[in-house]
Length: 306
Image 1: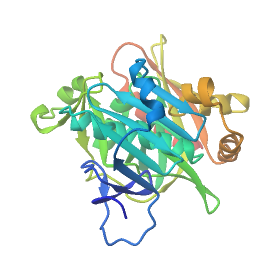
Image 2: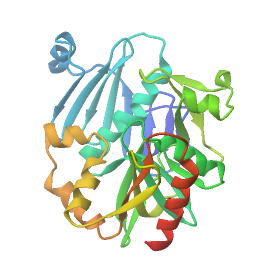
Image 3: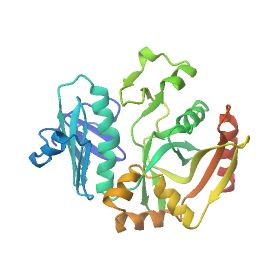
């Protein structure tokens, strides 16, 4: 094994030369095969021009990819098995680790032909549900409110889906939730005790180890939140051709699929298969006012219907 640390991230066994405090730690004596290695090293020479030309990302289909966080590090993701990190000597370890856990690992899954949904996953009554939607629609707020009710936590921001033994499963990612400053203050969290993540979005890392479910859980529903000018919460069942479009629209790195690498046939086939096991609803909430309780009530009602 190459690396001083061993973790379970997105259901994969990861050996890392870098410490990743947010991840679920595995015993170094664990005999599980290594799925992914995280190494400190030099980015391949042919990518040097990307940084020199001011690029932020580069990808070669679904085989390898590169991205850059200025002043922190460059990252090279290869063949679904390896992440090379070239630090730049800055003092932003939180951002570096956050990029490994989010963008780098999601590129790993893309290269492995595994769909990842841009949303959060929680566990209610032994089944997982995904809360998705565009930025600012209230995904984290709704998720956090459910967690305060004592439900289980699987994933924040990115959810890996896969088929096994005739069921569709959501995998646990890592026991951390990203929350914005306003939500942290509103819920009374001590900002001094939270880890600040400078991703340009003023967010903090909130530990979810107490609520974290460390095993994959059958997933049955995805709820896509959307704001409306109507003054009430209501929902729409997404079926037929709209279902596949809604699924693809909520993939993490959706723009990469649509505009760069395309949607590989192998991945598309997996999505079509998953469509037989998943209910998707749009849940509309008023653009103004606090409707979180009504959104939760609507979601719980839909869980009984599907």
